[in-house]
Image (cartoon, one colour):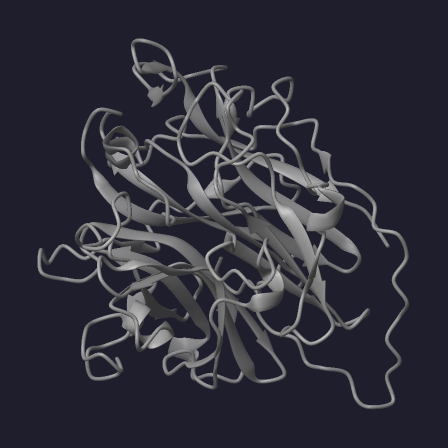
Length: 408
């Protein structure tokens, strides 16, 4: 799910024809003049939050999603709907181990989502597969120039064991799967994979060839002017004891979504402490705004300033915002110490805390943020989340919440 420790209790609980908004952008001709950017308004939470609550929807197999994590949100201008992908554990009850899946749903107004009965992608059942234990953090783009069966590209994180060089991490890599309808995805074949494994396209060693140990996770895709851009969380270590040498957001590019060329790892301009390569954030969300010729990124940082959040599981105080004119060098808002959304114990759907990894969709000048909260309201029977109490758990549930930012 992310490059932080995954607690066992949550691990156990955890659009046809749609054209995702950030999926493809044709850069305007040279005569196009970029529109000036005014002051950016703040994000405002929707009054109808939460838009989804884990465990509420019962599927035809009489099972439920016991968790909601790693949302990927986009706007389809063609279908006039929002497309949502997220990672979950699918099980009969919260206590069941279940199966890790990536789900898809659609919404016209973000007040609620119609969920597909079948998952978009399921953890590989082969116990030897690189993505047998974890199949999560989806990101999807649409490519109208691709063959029909490859019009939709999904990239996701996967793992099958603990990372050998740092406690709390899984041995994450990144995989790719294609779809014709945006609902049902198939992993690339082993013959297609640069690593000769079903689905696998990008590893820690690809990002850090000289590292003793390295992992990559939390992919984020954009397709702009025929080039795929991938941003991702990354960690590397080296030397005696494999001490950390890098922690932050990396960037790579590709012409086919399968073979990737590293641009920079980690991206220096996104470090919290300039010049210190182990001070980066994680779980990027990126959009490109062709009207203003502007790239925007939202970043989850390590779990600081979260001590007051009652539920404790990969928390964030809120995402940071960064902008770029070329997608390479970024200007983050760290200096002002102002996040684009800050946790509020009074907000419905997040009263017990926030999970890292929000995702942002673009529709013209508007921005839509999907983020996961922890709540003790309307909790399904026997749902629990880890907290700081002596018991270690409380009755709580993961929710999907929405915030919006208006026109420039």
